[in-house]
Structure formats: C-alpha cells, structure tokens
Image (tube, rainbow, N blue to C red; front, side, top):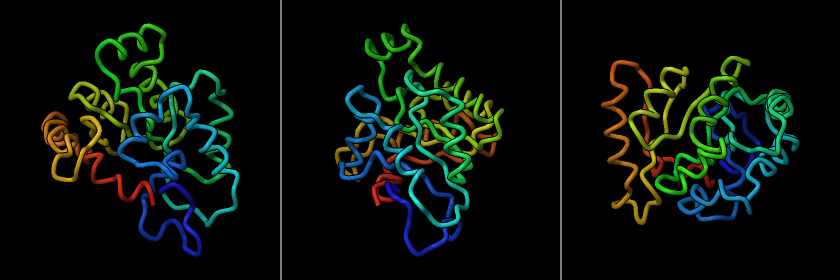
Length: 194
C-alpha cells in the first residue's frame, strides 16, 4: 500500500506492506527506479509515518536499507513511533546485477549491506522480510530470520510474462524446509500501489 488506509484498522487483513514511494508510479517500474539516486524512497516513508493513521497491526515498511544519508537509529525511532513492526528491503539494490551490481557492492551499497541492515533490524526487535532474486540471497534471508521473501526477476511486462513467477518457484525450492513463504513480486504489485 502506498498510503495508510482510512476508516479501517490495519490489523483487519494484514500483514501490510507500506511502500509510499510507489504512489503515483507504475509499480512495475517503481520497484526498479526506487533505489536510484533521484528518488528518495526513505523520505517518502518518513513523511508517511508522520501522518495520523489507524492503529497498526502487522505492518512491514518498505525501507531503502542502503541509504547512506539516514541515521539508522532515527529510522528505527520513526518506525517504532508509527507502530511499524517490520522492515523489508524495498526498494532493493538486489534488482541490480552485472556491472552495476558489482559497482554498488564495491562502494558498500550492495546486497551485503541490505542483509546486514536487516540482521541488525531483527536484533533491534523488528520483524524482517526480504526481496531476493537468487537462491543464495533467499537462503541468507532465511538464516537472518526473515518472515517471508519477495522474489523478483526483473520488471514484469505483463501478468502472463512476469519473470518473478519463475524466480519464486526456484527460491521456494532453495528454502524448502525452512517454512519461509516465498511470493512473486508480481503478486504484490496491485496491492502495493493501492
């Protein structure tokens, strides 16, 4: 969801995934541009958290976990004050592979930093979930205590041609036996933008 629901309690149908940076954007595109420098996803989230909202139930905030310009303690305080109980690495740098992925990793802005952030959030008392494109990342998220994984395989072009569906099948096999649910990103796009 890109905004707090009005006139309803959040625990009526949760858990919820709060991603205000999706507002007004095609979600299939926003998930990929959300991590780029001209789009301050965490500012959108912090602005949303400050708004009056219903009593929260289980809410995971889509947080840009490698944001080098935010103080982690301030993020935790804002999430806690708003009643947010979970964090998911959305937008995620895990969507970038190849040369760009390697470049981000060389600046300590890659998936390693996201996973470390999520581990620290778990230690700080938050529930965690993760976005992953590979079996290795999904297994590491399971080891970190993630409640669920959102599989992505690139920007979907249509519902029938969503690459995250095949990735979700592969990740489910990789984490079989952990009990951790894996869902395709395409399954969330309609809900996340509402």
